[in-house]
Image (cartoon, rainbow, N blue to C red; front, top):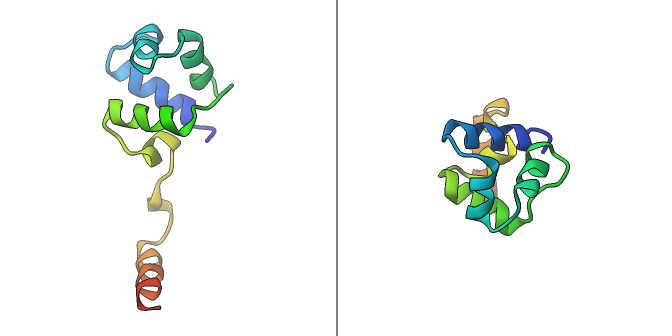
Length: 85
């Protein structure tokens, strides 16, 4: 989750929001948003999903997860094997 803060800051700035504005949306302080963006603290699952909803992205995007680094063929094979089992 080391990239979480960077991703959050980028999403916020891309939309022209201040930390204070985003804090009001989430019912937290601007200091909390600053801590998130500096990776000093991470949001609980409720705040994480609220952020994903607000920015209209998936949680995996917020966390910096990208399946492109993994073989999609392998992933599909694992799913198929699971379904068949």
